[in-house]
Amino acid sequence: ADRPGAAGGGRRGSAPDLMELLPQWLATANARGFAAPPQALPALLDAARGRTDLRPAALTFAGPRALWLARLNPDWRFALRATPGGGTALPGSDATERVRGLWHEGLFAERVTLLASLRARDPAGARELLASTWATERAEDRLMFLDSLRTGLEAADEPFLEQALADRSRNVRATAAELLSALPHSALAARMAARAATCVSLDRTLAPPAIAVEAPHECDAGMERDGVVAKPPAGRGERSWWFGQLVEAAPLSTWPTRLAGRTAEGIVALPVSDGWRNELHAAWCRAAVRQRDGGWARALLGAPTAPEAGGPGAVSLAERAKLLGTLGAGERAEWVAGFIATHGLSEAFQLLGMCGVPWATPLGRAVVDALNIARDAGSYPWSFSGVMGLAERCLDPSEAGRLDGLLAIPDEPEDASPGAGGYWAEAFQRLVTTLRLRAAMAAELGAGS
View (cartoon, rainbow, N blue to C red):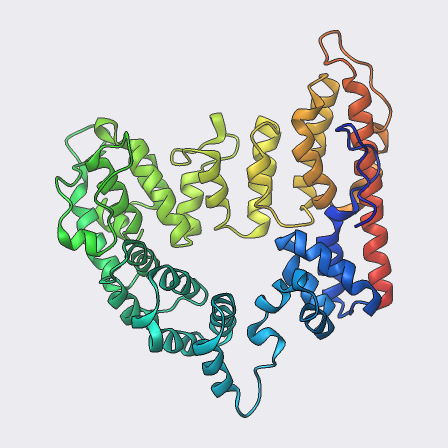
């Protein structure tokens, strides 16, 4: 924490940013079963206080002494809130009573943490605990508690979620409906499928056949109860707004039956009449993400080498990134590597954030090749600082040797940004140094096991 590595004046310099490597160091140390030296705990807690993303790994590494310290310093109270019971071990013969005691008497943050922890290991027990006080909870608390049911969502949650559809809070109703629609065999999913199917049909009079859309003309009470928001955002038409919500909540298994037995790829390839294509495909994108359906995600993503690499349904980079999240790590990396090889790095930052660390070899090499092309073209180097920072944390350290040829200051084309060559050399020097530091870090922690 005392050696950030970045130079002043806005330039990061060539030294590694050690704080950016701390999450990886903690993850590796925890995986090896190490514990923090007691004298390091104050600095560790200070670092976790300033960065919420560090807290789970930092508290695991710090162990129970951190909770003892947290009771002595108000600045470290986050550690108590992040641990069920503030460090009181829950297992034991009276664990059930202590769980109920904390649930009824604990602070809100403690109750949220307790519910999330219990849900991870005992979904039914967490649901029963929530149901025991549901009627007396505040609306904003009910919303937060209900969100915990995303972990381990199962068919047995359906009766509780169906009751939540009648909640006084619109946000609670909407969350309950979203969770039910992620259960493809729920009654709500069936109701949404029936509604959506009346809006989408195959027009065989056209050559080739096309999808015809007839959006709903009203949002009735049943639709609202099932989570359809009646009032559209500013600038959005009512019918398209209702239509998108119905399609998003309908099980994707609805469509092959409705559209003459076609596969997801065949359905996505069909033309859509009357300008409804983007609306329909965007709703299918959201449905594929919600239902974690890799087959539909692949169809909607299309080939990474396609023009604009959007695929027919990926209406934005954010949608593409979410669709990638439904695929396995290897397939995800392969798709992003193909995208970068075809389209470069200018739009790849969000997509790279979806890929596992360290990057698979084809993805890492596609990133390095694209950075090298940008460097040789004299491109504005600061435009790539985000990707370069990701590469420092995510590129496989074994790739460091391939980068030695990029450390010299390149000749600058006439139209290059002034000083770009020096900045590129500095950035690649920092990348190589960081990769070698990560390799040494992993080797030291590995040897210690």
